[in-house]
Length: 68
Image 1 (spheres, rainbow, N blue to C red):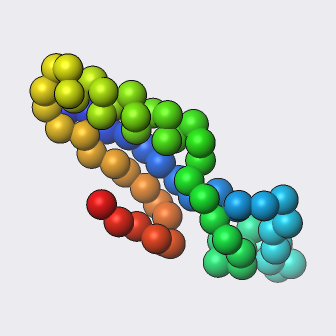
Image 2 (spheres, helix red, strand yellow):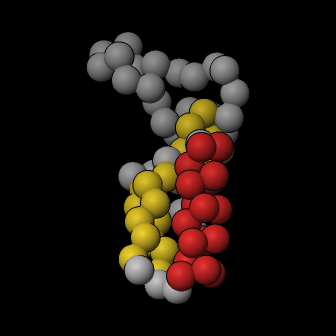
C-alpha cells in the first residue's frame, strides 16, 4: 500500500508579518511548527504501514526545516 500524507508548516505563535504589497503572510518572519492535524495524519499513516505494509510518502510545500 502506498500512503501519501500532506503536511505544512504554520506559525508557532499568533503574531505573523504580512507583506503590505501582496497581503500574503511572510513565511520566513518567525518560528514555525508542523500543523498538529498533519502530525496526526502522519501517525495514522505510519500505523497503517506497520499493520498492512507499504510505504509512507510526505508531501510538503514548506521551505523551512525539511528533514526525514
